[in-house]
Image (cartoon, rainbow, N blue to C red; front, side, top):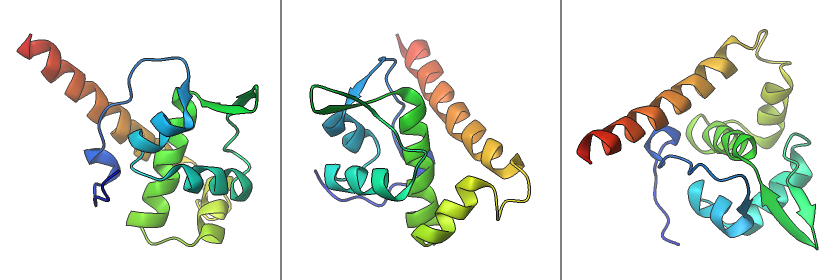
Length: 119
């Protein structure tokens, strides 16, 4: 998987599937699978479904992983700082967190709309 410096808004849309394997999740977040496994240990919010010794990520998990990626890789947070931000301790309120999620969702919807128009 090539290393790129895409921002969260430049990552492709998340397909409308119910579950994603760790390989699919890693590709959609432009990360390596071992990073996702490590983040499970560091961020209690990352809790993929585990069946038959395999991890399955849902859409909400991918949004969270992209948010963590943005905090660490783009905004320069440390893991401890990102953990605090996600817990809401340094955010004061959830407004910024919701704005970021809305920006990601809007970007994905605009890409879907563009695809539909081109058909």
